[in-house]
Length: 132
Image (cartoon, rainbow, N blue to C red; front, side, top):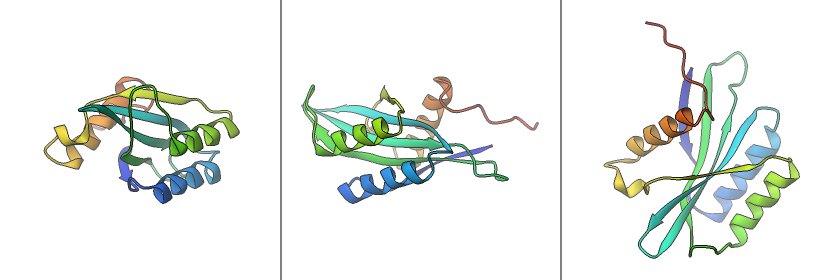
């Protein structure tokens, strides 16, 4: 199975695109994630959604809006509230994860590999089949 992070963007319209993907592919939705990274005096919030592969493919996408929401600890904002409303509408929980910020990695691909490993170790994504 190929598992890949597909980054949408950090903006408001990107988050609405993610919510549209979630709603229109609810039959394939595996999990919704809120990923928090501490940066200086604020928390950078990312939202992601993992989907099951579309038959007959073995490609499992994880769509990501990376670190576009900055809040102080305990705060919320309109984008967070919109994603919470989307998850509630589908009766799905948002899984909160904490990780290092993407800037702690040499490039985004290393950060994506870290996220995939984190999701696998938490059993949110299945381990890929080993064909060796």
